Amino acid sequence: MVLHTADSKRMTKALPQFVPGATCSRCDVCCRFPEADSFLRPYFTRREITEAVAQGVPHSYFPNKSGSQINLVKSPSGEGYLCPAFDAPSGRCGIYEHRPLDCQLYPLALMWDQSGQEVLLGWDTKCPFMRDEPSRSIQTYAQQVEAVLRSDAMIEQLAAHPRLIGPFQDDVIVLNRLPHLTARLAQQRADLRLRPLTASDASAFAAALERAHVLHPDTPAAFAFPFHYMWTSVLSYWWMEVDDTWFLFAKSPDGWFMPLPPLGPGSLDQAMQLAFTLMRQWNGPSPVSRIESVMDVQKTVMTTDEIQFRPKDGDYLYSAAALAALAGDPYKSHRALCNRAAREHVITSEPYRASDQADCALLYRRWAEQKCQDHQDRLGQLLLEDAELAHQLVFREHDQIGVSGRVMRVNNKVVAYTFGYWLTPATWCVLLEVADRSVPGLAQWVFRETCRIAEAQGAVWINAMDDSGLPGLRAAKLAYHPTAVLTTWIATRTAT
Image (cartoon, rainbow, N blue to C red):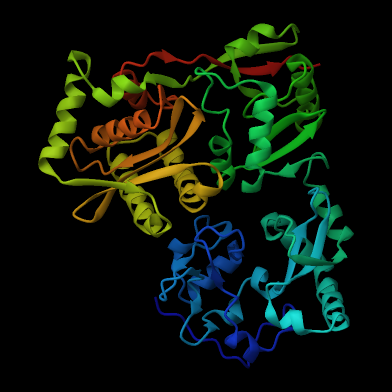
């Protein structure tokens, strides 16, 4: 990658610069990150991505061209990760004149308070220069930045890209509250109790599942944090807690819906009625208001006539022992394909590491192209486009959300990967699985390997999730002889 060197005399004037450039070039903090999926990675808007690409940063480092955090690269020193726009030998940014707002702000930071209700401006104590500066100088600088942040253009930019406002950090010292920005963002939040879903919410989600007592062998895959969090790269997910009950909402271009029922110890009837009342306020009479993944056992306890149910594609549940063995005539063809793959190739299987991210991303694109060559319909193509963003998020943040993966290689080339999570102590859920379609039998070999490892770790059941309504996927999953196809429902409420 060739980056255009920035002339230090032609610095951006969008925000005042507080830390001297010479000091920055000698620092070993900025632009360096301990993890590949660090939440501190700079965020680029659509315009900023276009400018960065024009300066030599490859498109591939931006998972979502409408706005996203940049993907990091392994540090040549072997320790940690770098922004791909950073030139390590010189200690300078290769796109300094065109660096994004997120970088211009630093060492100040925009973040939500601990309750997720108010936007704050603070300074990051990780910056060594700021630690040596008088507090009065920092406050004066913050006031200058705040004046810029009050401009209509800046407020609208932040409103269009709310991910520029990060989660609360206890090592960032709060300088000022930003009520003007809080008020503008509140216009986009249907309810001020709503909080954006982040990786740090995984433990609270798990606690809500425990309170709701919904985890059983036949619980759908949707009753797990990673199932939803991976799609925050495509949709906006929000949550709120009311009377010890967790409500998870997703906002699509059509409006708000719930991807799973409320989670709490109290009356499900009352909680679902509250959810529909909220969605009615936000969506009006739109039919988009719905609650997905309602289990059979939940449907049977509903007493109101106002809520109707229609069937949803169900998860495929298998015996882990049966899929690990693939014994007998029912699995003859699968066994033959596994044997062919093993006979024709030496396949290695290792736990996924952050350094595998780029190879897995390349495999996904190759696999998606292979799928499209098989005459995918428009729905299938759209699912592939959305899934690429979800897969990339899992590559980056798997360890934060309770997901583990494995990578398969042939001749040191990544040819397959699989990711999953423990839905219950006895149920392993396959979240993602991709195998190079040019290698006969590889997909079957990978699935069997996944099931063997899961069984060895205590799995009794394998949940392979639903078939997304795709006939080919349905046929493939039925061919493995599921123990059950779990019945789930979509709930709607009669408009009043």
